[in-house]
Image (cartoon, rainbow, N blue to C red):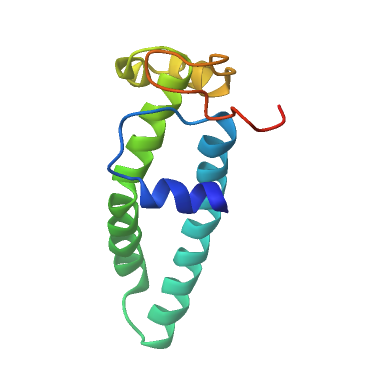
Length: 120
């Protein structure tokens, strides 16, 4: 949860590095929050007798649009953790490999190791 909050607070930060735990924690918690928001919106819309299918679609799209900046930020910082340029995040399937790959040990051109001082 701490990584999710960190990513949400630093959505504007495209510098530095993000470890695998930060990236995947954000992705997992974001999935759970999206499901919870969808269920909550569905319950509210059903209770108000509103066309739930259209409103659900609009509501979830707005929610996902709001989460786009933090997602892009953590994605770029994750790619930088492996010592690659941000543009590598745009290459389909290769970016998944990068997101799963261990980051560079020690400092690289994008900043200090985010795991420095932590037990690896």
